[in-house]
Amino acid sequence: MTAAVLVGLVAVSSVQAFGVLNRNAAGNRIITNARVIVQRNIDTALSVTCGKSAIPAILATTPTAGTVYDDDGGAANIVTVVLAGTGGVQLVQGTLTRIVTSVTNTDAADIRQITFRLNYTFRARAYAYSLTTMRAIDD
Image (cartoon, rainbow, N blue to C red; front, side, top):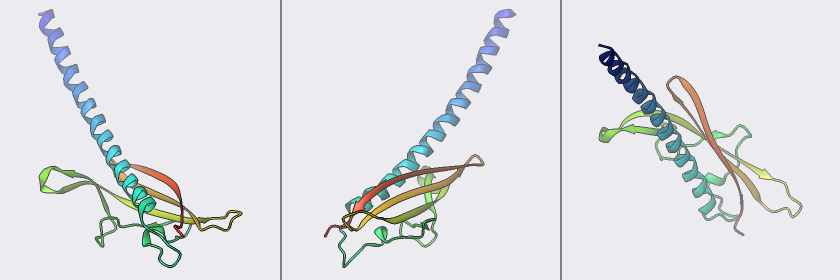
């Protein structure tokens, strides 16, 4: 009888532990996806060709609070962070903000500070992930 109770306690504890581990894994997958989205946009801002006569939209200066940036080309201004399976059901969505400001310097070069911030909600908690870089105009 004692052995059966112990086996039952171990089984219940194991199931609860697996539930906690699964929730933690889901949270980590979402954080990884948010990082990838932000890094993809930073990489684009660093690699796009930019001259004084033609500054691409991704490098155009913004107000200090930034502007909502639509990196998928749609009109919804919503970024999909996680999709469920092959059906394309959006589980987690967020808002990507682009902040580009001019950096003053002694050489009067056109240098811009670029920040991308992704705000999203998961399990009724708000999260944000951001990266910042600097970029000079090519010519």
